[in-house]
Image (cartoon, rainbow, N blue to C red):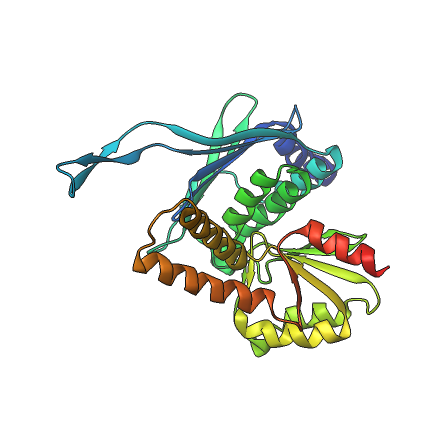
Length: 317
């Protein structure tokens, strides 16, 4: 009977950890993006995404060619939106973090030059808080508690953020961490995958990508969305090979889109009668080469937009 009582107490303590939680906040401070804070409201089943900076630098011109910068401690809010969380997804998330032994405020730090610092804070119904402050991003034994939290957290966000800008912000945060192949399936009809980070290296470095390409059906169109990701040029020969075997379409390549935008801007300036400097002419030629090297690759079906892909698919049926 004594052991039964102890067992029941352990179960109650475990269950009460989640039932006592009111909110969970994850605050990220990346080196090359604005700070982003996510607040999960457990009772209301929502997550608020809040992107901001606490200060900025303003130019103060000394004369027509020189200036100095001055820091202004002014809050700038770049994005804020609240999303509803699916009840089942929230339960899965809470069940996952229930196994984490975050029972006191702790700090994990290692020397870094550029990276991301973050804080995970649990807020109880009595407004008591405990937190984990860390800058560990490599997935290993030292960062086990971080990834025990981050894995279900990013899974929750990717399933419940239904705004494109909010999704891109989240992908840019997630890209600082160790998530191997930055690729996720986003649609079934037609089959579509989204590249949300950089797939670097060459054939021998990308066994996971090769296995995915091999597993794709032969007679169905497969789309790859590159609007917030990139595939190394070294992998072009892999894409060319599998484009001969599979019905693969790629759209939204960031480099091509950026080059096309710069070309359009320079051409528009020329139409308005502006005299183009030597540097702008060189920029135009450089981006023209980047754009046409991408668009003229006859072995890979590449498009600027998804609509272009869908029209092409419709015309082939």
